[in-house]
Picture 1: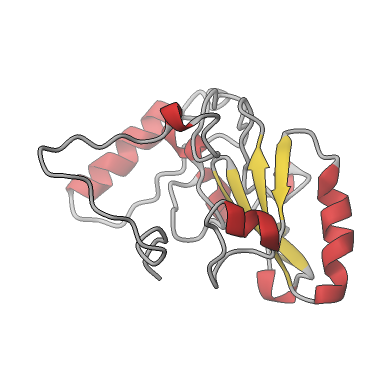
Picture 2: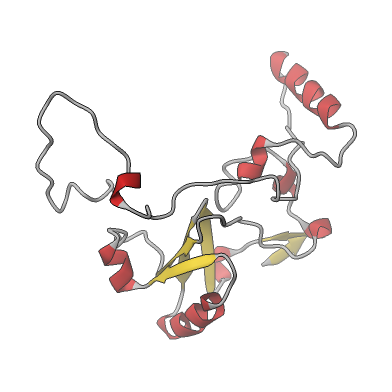
Length: 185
């Protein structure tokens, strides 16, 4: 972590371990193998984590690809992972309240909401949209720092095969191969 202008920014390349959160899945990257057990122990008892997959668990769930984290955390059914890494909202990075998908280290579903604590949030949004319409640069700085409005998510392992995505076609199903069961690299 480094601080710039009073705001905290994640520095994953200098971190011994960090997670990339995506709804109900978080890939945990551990720089040094000797830190893996300490990382696992730090995560093991956190509320909201149902499973922590190691190499064997990743193979079982077809998540064992080169870009996968050393550990993969699976959220409980009613929980999800946020990318928020700061402890004090006053030190949140400048992009935290923006619709800024490329600078955030993980998906931020809170971007779907406007900050209910800001009485001028609709005026700010209207001003940003007007600047956009005029072809000017704009910043949509209307996102709250409170993730509690998020009531649902997706991405975790299905509870049963009946909960998996379906396929409907007149053609016969393709014959699966081990290479076809993995996402493209």
